[in-house]
Image 1 (cartoon, protein in one colour):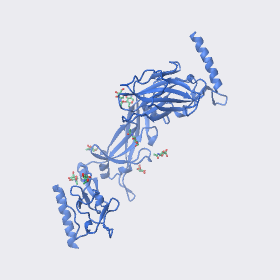
Image 2 (cartoon, helix red, strand yellow):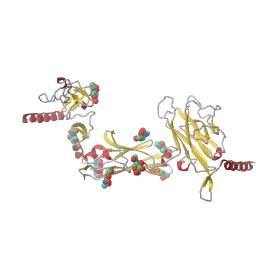
Image 3 (cartoon, protein in one colour):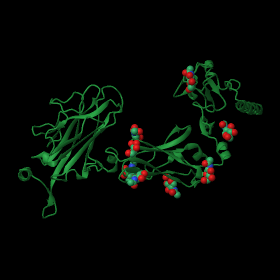
Image 4 (tube, helix red, strand yellow):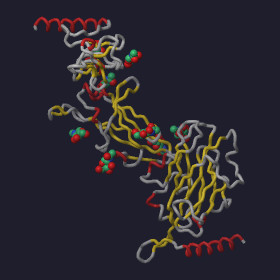
Length: 442
Ligand SMILES: *[C@@H]1O[C@H](CO)[C@@H](O)[C@H](O)[C@H]1NC(C)=O
Ligand SMILES: *[C@@H]1O[C@H](CO)[C@@H](O)[C@H](O)[C@H]1NC(C)=O
Ligand SMILES: *[C@@H]1O[C@H](CO)[C@@H](O)[C@H](O)[C@H]1NC(C)=O
Ligand SMILES: *[C@@H]1O[C@H](CO)[C@@H](O)[C@H](O)[C@H]1NC(C)=O
Ligand SMILES: *[C@@H]1O[C@H](CO)[C@@H](O)[C@H](O)[C@H]1NC(C)=O
Ligand SMILES: *[C@@H]1O[C@H](CO)[C@@H](O)[C@H](O)[C@H]1NC(C)=O
Ligand SMILES: *[C@@H]1O[C@H](CO)[C@@H](O)[C@H](O)[C@H]1NC(C)=O
Ligand SMILES: *[C@@H]1O[C@H](CO)[C@@H](O)[C@H](O)[C@H]1NC(C)=O
């Protein structure tokens, strides 16, 4: 017994020495036939059970070059798969290789890349040296913190949270050669405690990552670390949509004709001509008669040869877009009234389309749904910004819809409620308005 122990210790020392010298380890062969090689007991290997003898179901050692799993699943606990030799070895061996600040170690008898404590102690780093990296991508912000330094300092970065403590689920990955834990949050107001600030040109979202200290047997070994992070975006028609809780918008994927790339496209309504204030769902049924609504579309499709074009837009009182009552707003890419009530500001020239409509365009309706047939248009083969006489909508067009929009008289009744304008009232007021306008023109 003693002899065997010594032998084992000796071989470990030897392996360690070999490891330092950078030599390759050798296949583990067991001690006096224990454990048995799989070839001696008709054993086989599966990802679920590892390598086992067919008769006793005891674990066995796969013979060199026999375990097709090609991973540590081939090996008994406290052994590691060594791909170059295609066998199990005693010294911990990690695939893929560990990073410079890590050491391959057995944790729960499985080889894993763990933080190299000596490495960090040599550098003399403390909690003051913990920092974060922020990636602002599209409508996400991702905050990452270095896993290894935090673990050496007795923190538990895998349990990190955002301002709102139920925003958890940090995932591990490598970033610039460092192993990091990351949390991703969508840039919308209030989500996970996001704080939004904006000025005329930029909108900034700020949040905080909280990294808890390890809690070992109820004893907290380190205080929490809280690090603030933020992403700043230029104010655009697209980025302002995240600045309100529920914008009036609709998102569809356009048919990109198999050219690949994300063709995610949004249609949204705005209340100002500079498209910086989105219409909110809480306001969409309380629009003032006579007000102008600004409609903006934007596509993420990256190919520069393509622009966004709205072939037609129309309004109906019903949400399904069918029915005989229908107001054509845009046809063949252009306004149906050339101006006063329907203005096409930009169509078929960029990745954005802009048009505006005054509520007077919706003569005879007090509730309307807006429909838009939009598509990607190839500037190399078509004149995408031209007005076309055809009433046909191009084959690849996708329909977007917004609504219901309702128009209210600006005056409250005696009980303080705003009243929806009835059909006749609206027509009546429009008639008088037209008469007024006509008399002014004349
Ligand atoms: C085994 O896995 C290693 C890395 O995981 C790979 O480089 C090698 O090609 C694999 N060998 C076989 C036989 O699949
Ligand atoms: C751990 O870091 C120390 C100090 O940098 C280094 O000497 C040692 O080789 C490292 N250990 C491993 C297994 O990489
Ligand atoms: C670690 O933090 C201390 C205290 O803030 C600072 O003096 C030191 O330069 C930092 N070390 C590194 C490597 O950043
Ligand atoms: C944003 O994050 C979500 C969820 O994590 C993910 O599905 C989506 O692909 C991300 N978008 C971008 C642009 O990274
Ligand atoms: C977190 O909690 C808040 C308030 O209780 C809740 O509104 C929110 O939906 C929760 N978020 C998640 C991601 O569970
Ligand atoms: C708006 O905010 C951005 C980001 O915080 C800042 O860089 C910019 O100077 C601010 N502009 C004005 C006009 O205050
Ligand atoms: C540290 O963070 C944990 C988990 O987020 C939380 O439960 C605990 O209250 C925090 N402790 C302090 C002192 O803030
Ligand atoms: C933000 O706006 C500035 C000035 O208009 C411009 O130079 C910059 O490229 C914009 N950044 C992005 C990400 O669009």
